[in-house]
Length: 330
Image 1 (cartoon, rainbow, N blue to C red):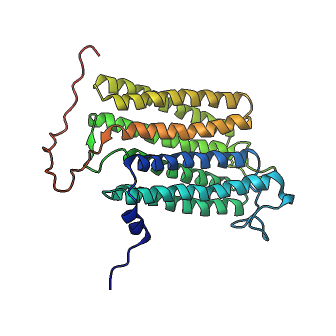
Image 2 (image 1 turned 180 degrees about the vertical axis):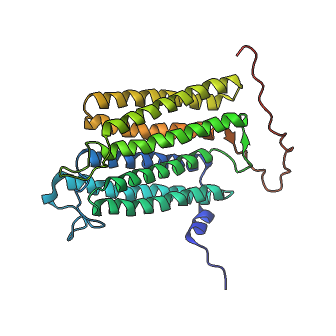
Image 3 (image 1 turned 180 degrees about the horizontal axis):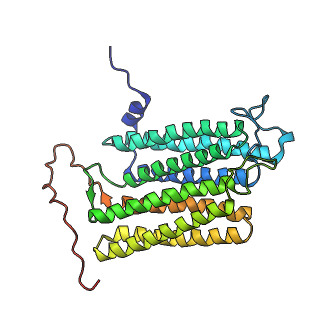
């Protein structure tokens, strides 16, 4: 009995997307992951978190919002529908990665990781509604969205590389500093969710449970980590220049500094103007851009070369990694 081909295999036999198409599909998942965060923030900032008061239906009797629910129901339901658009883009990225010859298993796996993260976050989003916008569940909902953005960014970066063994582009201590920066930014993001959970924008006009912590004190701790991340970024930029690192990591670090300064300015504006909704929304967008930028810095400090084509003799083995010399006068 002949083997039955799965649908992805059938598509791969009939469609060979270009490398550029695969990169574009991966980038689209990054854009959609950012958009789902920003629109989720709009749901909270417009007090539409319970616009659809139940889940998975919008009301007990209707899948979609009714006229009586007004604009809040439309906003909440629109955010739910956007999840399906996100799934479509992720599905396209999976199919494109699977159909590209030769098949890059690593890219396909990253696409499936995104799919399962979307599914998990959909369930957490439902729990968020059923628990009346419990701030701890809301924080978990945002952090899962950040995890999705992480995997999407890695897939986008990997789509422009090969599948050969990774090799560092800077000495190990420099790469470790970059990952320390990623860790500090991750803590900063978690603290941001606590600030949100304790702050005034609860997501619904009615009284919603908040995290029982002094909002101004946790905000100050959040600001302290902003300065830590900024300091680590400046230090990394100087170190990369000192060790003569390639242009790409230096450019990524410069981009990160620009985004951090802009995000810090937005943060101060929102704090001293009483947290206006539009500025808070811009700050949420900025948090996504900071996370993307810091991941790109760390990922740019190593590369995966292309594997030799079938039947092609492999190149000379790589020389052991050595400490890059410090240019004189730096």
